Length: 337
Ligand code: PEP
Ligand code: MN
Image 1 (tube, protein in one colour):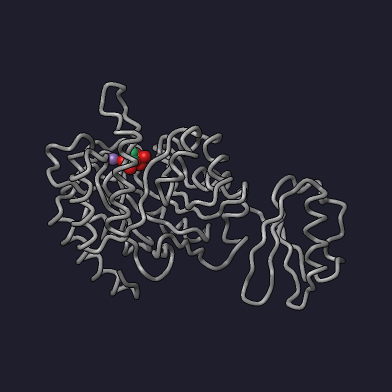
Image 2: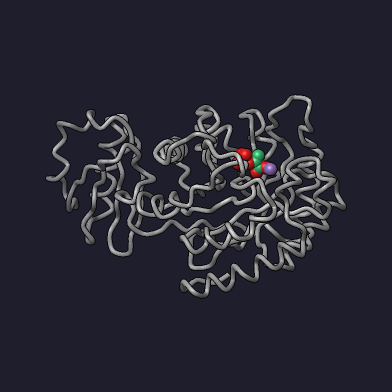
């Protein structure tokens, strides 16, 4: 439930509400609005059933949250959540472009792609060091060495970076290397991982599962947020359908639907969403037109030689043109790049 405090609620009034929530084994979640403080009581609400919170000093009203996800719902917070990371704001008027290779393959390779995508307008560098491959015999990523390379690129290029985490045991290590933890589609319902990441204060890029509904994506976000970390970026990356012309079916419906249901930023991955270089740019423009707050795209100097996902990776010149066109679409809908 949400407890809306009066604009003139005192510190003591607020502390009293927080203590009551904690005493009943729920977790308070504080959200400071422009005029008043809003306190969410997260957990088993039955524990508060007999507590007359509406009569407490400083309390204006108590509202139930009807959706199964609480902290991440629009009911809980009306304003869009802005996530600031390394000088970049995700979720605001500016469309954020994240780009880089599917896998980090070497130092020079990442530096070169990083330089290219930055000069074309990307503000976050992506690159996988631990890769969730369908086959155990496929390239699994460079691991810690890849993380070292990623950090070197981040420092040299002064760009925040995002990379995938697959195992709770890697959280401590990866905290030293990444600005944003990516939870891949295959781990969207790895609840142990989500809970651990919820106890960190790093932004999480949560990708939609291969066959996950929008509600399931939001419930996974709630797992993270319910532990205290609400710096979550949702990512539509295509879902499995009967269609075989594309790797996945990019669910553009998910963008406006998510924007209604949640205050969290929503970005789109047209690389995995299509699996096809020839339509990545078109679908990026469509995603921005549909209200996405950003895109995450795979770029490679020589896609035919890439160790993973070459067929969907853009060449640097294709990426550059795409970003220019995204700028045009952004302008048409009152946003910038
Ligand atoms: C990736 O970003 O390279 C990746 C594996 O993405 P997804 O989890 O969406 O398949
Ligand atoms: Mn990939």
